[in-house]
Picture (cartoon, rainbow, N blue to C red):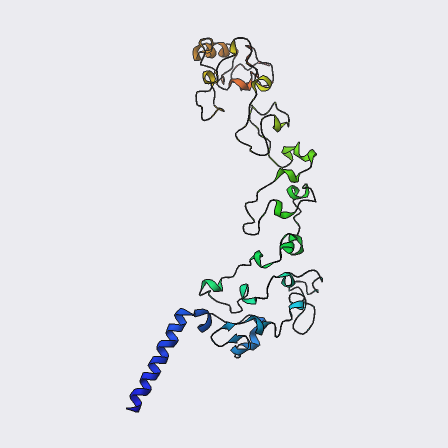
Length: 299
């Protein structure tokens, strides 16, 4: 009889342990070996863990003084860089700028699989004081690429970036100086199509930094509709959804047959892209373009 009760107690304990392993895996199951710095504590679980609570901040700071974390070892020696062996500069450490002491919010000292969502701990900038969040360079290296180097030094990283999603950045052109705002091609690759080629660097004629597209196009400045060509938009632009598409064959004077005959007499084979040569609605080209000619190309 006693043996039977003993087996019942053992079975009940096993059931409870299995249930706890499923309900509280971060407390009941070790996912892997400890990090090298804590390897000496492998057989001393209670050095970090409290019964039914898991690892606690109180037990961490019993060895790691908050004021020294990231700067000195538990023995008071300056922390050295792993690659160079040199001591780290005594600059502001973000551990001292946290809003609360909660080591487990970021750290899991066991290597191995992350068994629960609690074990997956990406760093949250929300743990930092507000003033510290705005001093990105105190932890992150200052970018040195051309785009960032031309920004106004008074503008901080948070002007374009957020801690929640560093990329993609929301670029604020107000961070640029007046001189840089007038030189878009410093950062943007200049367009190479025939329509943009005669427009020398003055993007603001059509575009704005608030909304690059859609662009405004002023015919009076860029393609004059003079004499007999003061037509409605639909005459040349058949697709209202895309005004980049156009045709000059909408007028009886410019039928495909007439245009082909007139251009082939001059040895011009590529005559579909009219604005490549004709920079206004005049009959004769003004010389800015010069079509792609084959067989009998003019000098």
